[in-house]
Image (cartoon, rainbow, N blue to C red; front, top):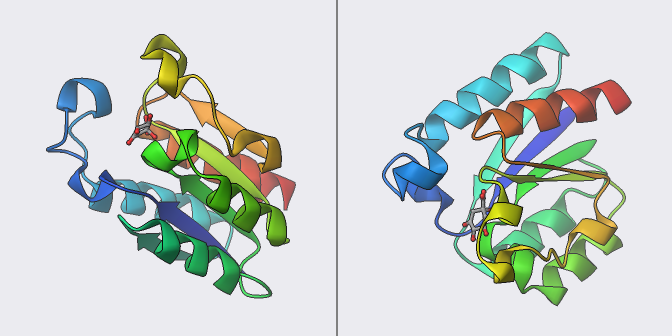
Length: 142
Ligand code: DQA
């Protein structure tokens, strides 16, 4: 039993990147927090981060038959990527979309998600804690 934590572009810079918006925790801190949740439910945690759209698509395809659920922060691709939306629609594992910031309080171009209609759920505005909350919600459903 395995859960995938997937992170899109610029999230490798978490902790240093715009700390007023995204906080001071690093991606390693986030992985540890989610791992505490998956450990509790006796799930393995796999993590993958990429700044490249095609690599994220490949990873989504590879989950087929391997992963029970996906916690995904698609970052800026949320607002632009038809290709990621089609990739999510093509797989069977449920995806929870996570945003650290409250995208609805920010620029207009961040208000719309291309991916939300093909995701099982969405968590926005709870900081890096959102990842943990998404994992918890997903594992309770599985
Ligand atoms: C983000 C919000 C996106 O609009 C932005 O492009 C990001 C991070 C978030 O976690 O709040 O890179 O997904």
